[in-house]
Structure formats: structure tokens, C-alpha cells
Amino acid sequence: MHRFVLILTIANCAVAAKLNVVYQWKYIDYVWNSEEHRQWAIAEGRYNYTKIFTIDVQKAPDQRVFVTTPAFNADAVPATLSTISSRQGPGGPLLQPYPNWTWHIPGNCNGITSVWRVAVDECDRLWVLDSGKIGSNQVCPAQLLVFDLRTDILQQRIIVPNYLSHNPTNKSLGLLITPVVETVDIYCRRTWVYIADVQGGGLIIWDGSRIWRLDNEVFKADPTASTFTIAGENFTLADGIFGLAVSPRYSRHARRLFFKPLASLREYSYAVDDLHGLGSRLKSLRYTTSNYQFPSQATAQAFSREGILFFGLTTEIAIACWNMNHPMDNEHVAILAQNSDTLQFASGVKVSKRGLDVLKEDLWVSTNRFQKIFTGTQNFSEINFRILSAPVEVLVKNSKCQRDKNY
Image (cartoon, rainbow, N blue to C red; front, side, top):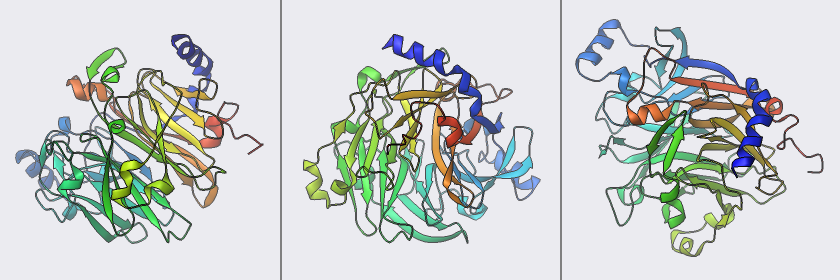
């Protein structure tokens, strides 16, 4: 396995430049209502840039770029969901709270409390997964918020009850961090949302009217894979189910939900048809385990419309890929981009349409040097957070993941 990693590293260094930095920050600041507003937030402990970090990125069809900044360990994050404005501050591009500042009032459970990741579907809907959690405190119920991106008006609010957002046997464990959306056609006449509970080790499923939870040991951390090494720094984190991705409906294969715990070296999947049933039937579901063992822990992941799965690798500090038309094994996994500075911990990985051309897609990646966040070793005079992007066809050209003409 070590020989395999070395070969991948050497063979792919030449393509690292294909993934380009679009935005970067030393620290996070916002487009405030006024300078008085900013100073009030600082004085009240509502804004402390040393407590803020980026997690997810989402390019919208109207070209806006969304960024999430969860309230991980403090209430010093004034807005947890934003778009990137055209204004520049000393730390980097200023963030514009979404939909506006009134949605980010502390303690208002009708607003937005703490968002780790979001998703956009084919019908221009933004799905916001609000964990409702600040640090270890569940200050509001977890919820799914659905916004129409054409109007920025809230279309739907789905409350996730505490008994579903937390582990059923240890009710102190529960943190909803990743949503992925499955639709059956371009009109989104049927929609399913799959949600990862990284702390409680569970998968929550919403089918448009009903919501239930699936618990399984496979959603939990692998103790043998809970130590991370990134850019020479080590830390231990027993995070469960983390990366989710639904395979595209355009593939010749039946659609599957691919998932993996962060503290794991394996990829797993369920047939989505099996997940569309009621909770009572889910106990007998069977999942598939890949034969492939990742060289290190994989982070966020996303599929292209042609069935290429993109994911981050922690120790390799890289973005890798696999084409689902082939077995997931050493022969069919490739490192596409590797950069020890810009790709430290890919916390957000998305594939988005490029403008009006539905056949052209771009890969978007958010990186945040999470090892420094976790160990408290950030230096805010350095670049800490980045968003990178590249056309999918450019990234995979002449790689093992390039589209096979036979499919």
C-alpha cells in the first residue's frame, strides 16, 4: 500500500496546477450593516475571527458562491451561512450573511444557528442543514431549510426531532453535518434528502413527507483510523459518517448512496431504492463495502454527472477520483491534484454545473487546514482558508477517471 501511495504521488504531481485558488482568507470578516454593528458584535463576544473557519462551498446556478462557517466551539460566529461578496477586507473577501442578517440572531430558532454543509438541487433549491448546535449545546432543534435561489424566499422548513438527530442510546451524541439530495427528474417531482450524524453515528432520511433514522455500526468511527496526520501535525478524532454522495441518475448503474465515516479507510454504499422505504424495514438493509482501502482518511466527496467520485485525502493532501464504471481498486483510483499548501483538509467538495451548459461541470473544493483548528495552532497572518475550482473535464483528462467511451 505504501508503494501504491508513492506511485500515485509521483505520477500526479504534474497535474496539481489544474485546481486553481479562486478565493482565500487569513481570517473571516463580514459585510456589516455599519462599523458600529461590527464593533457592537466584538464587544458583545458575537464576533471573534479566531473562532471562525470555513467548511463548505456551493456554487449556485446564478454564479453566487455560498460558504458555511459553523459555530464549532463558541457563539462568536455572527453568521453561519453566507455568500462571498465582491468586497475585500484585510483578511480576505468579505462574507455577506444569507439570506440577510435577520436570519442570524443568536437564540432565534426561527433563524439559522449553525450550518456545516449545504446542497443545491436541479430545481435551484438551496438545502441548508442547520445542526442547531453551538459547541456541545443543542440550543435549537436541528432543521432543514429549503430556499428558492431565484427569490431567496424560504420554501420549506423541516424540523428534525431530537430523538432523530441524536444517537438513540447515548442522547448526548448528535451533530448533523452533511446533506445530500436525490431527485428523480429535472422537475424534482420526488425528492429524498440523506443526512449524516457524525457524532451519533446515524443516517437520517427525509422522503418529502416522512423522516426517519437508520443506525448501524458501519456509520461509526473505526478506532484504528482515528489518528490523522496532515502536513506533519497529528491529532485524534473519532468522527463517524461524514462524506455522502448519491451516484448520478444518468449512469447505467442503479443509483446508490455512497458514504464513509471520516475515521475510516473504506467506502460503503446502499442502493437508494432500498432507502426509500419506512424506518421499520431499514433494519434489515444490506450495505456494500468497497475492496479498496484508502491510503489515508478521505474527507468530503461528490459525484459528477458521468459517475466520477471526487474526494479529499488527508495525509496525501490531495484530491482523488474514481470512475464508478470500474471497480474501486488500486487500478482505478487516481490522485488528480496534490498541493501541500492549498489542499490541507478538503472539508467541502462539490460538483456544479457551469453556467447554462448542463453537460459542463466544475469541481469546487473548500480547504481549511483543520489540523490547525483542532490543535489550536492557527496563525492568522497566514492563509488559512481557500476555495479552489477547475473544470471537471480538465481535471480528469488522461487520468484513470476519464470517461470510458464504452459507457
